[in-house]
Image (cartoon, rainbow, N blue to C red):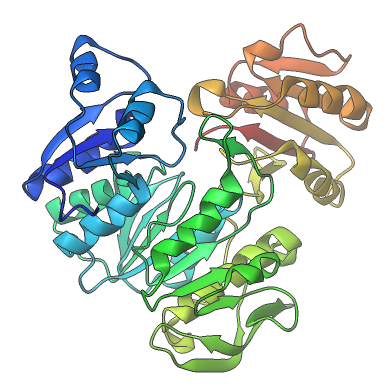
Length: 436
């Protein structure tokens, strides 16, 4: 069952985009009902009693033990994911006509890859949507959109806002949670590490992302993956990374060989680029840059049209900057992990031995927090190696101890305290889980 064939459709989970999908479906003449499985109202109970629908659209992460899911399955009503619905709606309404589309998914590095892609194609009109920002850029001008999450339905919302504002992008770049919708000319899976469970613990997030590759079957598009995922390329696609892959970076040179672009041709060559900071050559940014270059070249954009000057780190993603005479390594974002600290600390100590650490979580901004026991062990073990550690998050007070361990309720408060307690030339590491 697909959307075209269905007359009456039930869309689940308004928290994660059901309302957006429902409005699009109403626009193409469908009889649509939205249902919140997390909170049953009196009208919701009526829906449960009268499951007379041709199709149910549900997010991939939804717990199958919800009563609405069990009843719909018991009535043999076909299911479709939000990702699949976005693909079909986009095709029905032809919303990407004349636009080259990239979508990026993965457990880590999604935002960095999206932002680097935008840097490489900054001579074009680019619409980009990430967990950090949604914006349209053209000829050095920027139009910012209201902040939206990475749920797949927001692909449709972003395009609706762009149309209403008469914006006509050449390229659209989307960061999408938990898999690929199939809308793209090029799709990127950045990673599957740091796996976790979804759908009430019944599925691995990595398995969901792998399964989403089916949304590209027969599309004639290209899929870009890092070396460890090359077994996923059961269709045309490119890998980046070590030698023997389609693309790799050596020093400040991009080397590509047998790279398949979306028209089916294969290209080879070299491109020199100029990073603003030398540390962009480290593993984190090298891999992100490889993914970004691999993506834009896969789109068929000629190398001479790319911006290869002044490639810079992404805000909140290992970005080194100065703050009131101190060095700030900013790695506070929604996807940061405690595991990153060893590499960041090593980077900091190459600058100064006087290092302050800000760590923790602004829980009001993120769905997935920081494990309290893991944070406690890290802070109490590493505290002697830092001038000061400031833990962000009221929930950690009284649970973590140390002579040089302080607490703050917000990241900005912690940054002010770190600057006040340090001297010029010191390094402040900001590694807080937050939405920026």
